[in-house]
Length: 110
Length: 117
Image 1: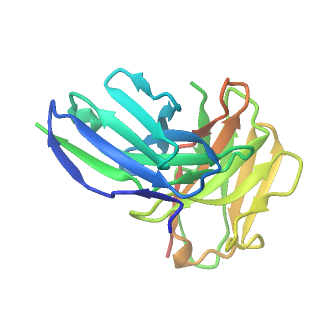
Image 2 (image 1 turned 180 degrees about the horizontal axis):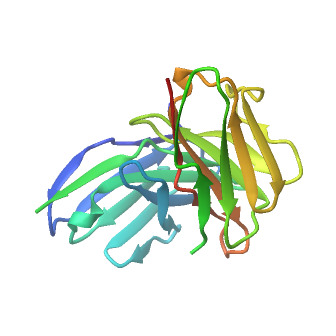
């Protein structure tokens, strides 16, 4: 089983739509969780950390379910500029090693 | 936000040559830097963890004699791909850890595209 699994997509949505991505992780000792965004041929950039109680940053909402080892990202009112690959990233506590999922591609069309 | 630079941004070289990639943290000191590699449509794969003043820790399957890492200062780590071959062609990305933040955060460099002919 892969350490971090994501649906590769692509998710094709129109502008203004709401879209959700899911991610599962295999290591129950994982303690830190993040969503990164990676544009084509660019480096990943931190979108948001994911906290146990769930957290929101503007149009983006992240949720964590430790029991199911599952993380989600919800994007409301999608913009064309949201088109990118969204990477689910997990960090085992006590270490700094980030484990990346393969990413989910989002394409927002006019 | 914290800035990490990489140089060069792209390299084309002949098979058998060595290529050196620099990773610099521009506005913070990074005791730890990481080197990743990403093949097309694949996830970032950690190659090694570079600690200032000590030997790098390599992930399983990464040849330490082929991918030489030097972390001589708190703001600079270098990765040298020795005797590069076409299968080494990839996107190499470094990241630097900023422990000054509330939560440890890694900041990524812009990456280096290596094409070995």
